[in-house]
Length: 163
Image (cartoon, rainbow, N blue to C red; front, side, top):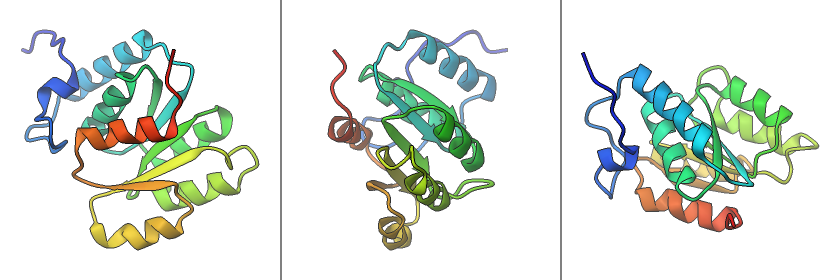
């Protein structure tokens, strides 16, 4: 039986790479995500769409350290649906997702009347997909595995500082 763990996901990883050697227990991820969403106080919101819960939680943790609220969706269709209903300043999405790919999510949102101004960053583990990412109307892309500082730079580039 595992006792409650109260550490940041950033503390679980080396500072240079998000590759997880051992997956977190799903209940622990859910608990950490819920706790993080309750304590963050930012004026801008970030949507993380990633089907790997460990990576989704890590990206959300890094963004929240900058003071922004995050929402996590684990498939492309749910990500698309919530992005249409709610306002997000930035969407960070994986390319390979169940139900709706990151490419499709990006194209559909950029074509929607309320989605033209949202910044979208696509992530992929496949370097050969970089050309497709550029053609998808995305504002930026990350190749996995990436440095934690890469997420920091995205937040600084696309979001206004939280006061």
